[in-house]
Length: 110
Ligand code: HEC
View 1: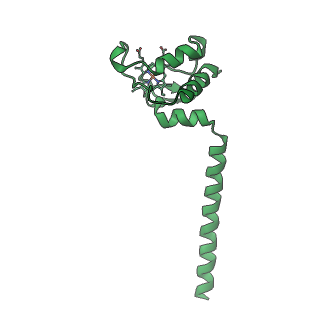
View 2: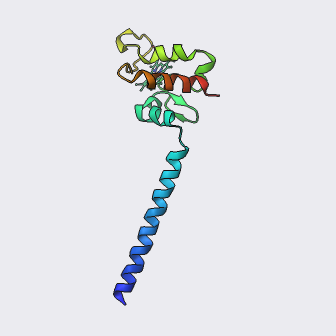
């Protein structure tokens, strides 16, 4: 009897675990990989992008109406010492491809 109850509990717990895994996989499938990169890089610690982010620096949601993708990209690799409007790290160490992806993504935000 005890073993049976134990098995049932294990079954319930493992199915809950599977549901959690499935939901997590679903969510990451829906998130744009470039947005995921932006999240990992911490841009939203300072900038608002879309519905979330900080207010230490300019809101980037409508950056595409002020700058071209090339101009956005140029901003990402400015050395901190060359900035006058506050601190932002230089993202120069990123792959060229990732700098392009991020710039195009921000440029194309509605
Ligand atoms: C530590 C805070 C911080 C982080 C993190 C940060 N930024 Fe910035 N960002 C700033 C500040 C401050 C400025 C304004 C700098 C200036 O005027 O020279 C700025 C300026 C910019 C600009 C130019 C905006 C404009 O209106 O001129 C762009 C584009 C930009 N950031 C994109 C990004 C992206 C993309 C990331 C992540 C990859 C990022 N930033 C991460 C603080 C940050």
